Amino acid sequence: MKKPFLLFFIFFLSAFNVYANQTNLSITPPPIVSPSFSEGKSDFKFGLSYLTVEDDGTIPNTTVDMTGAGLNLIGRKAFSDYFAGDFSVGVYSTSGDIKTPGLKTEQEAANVNLSFNLELQPFKTDIVSMIVFLGPTITAINGTTKTTGLINSSSSYSVSLYGMQVGVQMGVKAGPVEIIPFIMSSSMQGLSLIHI
Image (cartoon, rainbow, N blue to C red; front, side, top):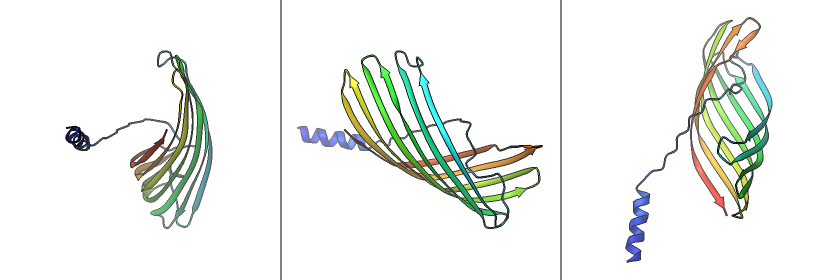
């Protein structure tokens, strides 16, 4: 009797697809080196970032204290006044803890992002420019968690994601200032492994 029930249960679970959806709005540096290019020109940009997250009460009886840092390199080579190729490599690390009554969870994680894009520049003037970009993106994340208190456990995890990204970036010169709005969307899939 147990085998037919187990087979039915496995079949029942496999009949459903699991989907996740996430929407974020953030203010970040633009994903492309600069909002315009010219034939034969190469551009590079290097960035460093520092992150701190502290929360003492948004979730009742929970405190969060996380810090992290990262570096990013973006480059571009223009093949003509209309087409270019770019790449981006980012390495980031975070660590910290989450405390709840009776539990403390320490977490460390590192990730690497890699993307390549083809860029189309449909128009460029002295004041306004626009670039449309599309390409593959890959993310790899490795981390560990250790929980102490009422429950004592530790685990490690790894996540591998791949997909495509598409976006539009503009450049608007307003005197000595250049405003660079952009919108980007990515669709990713992959695999996560948890080792307990």
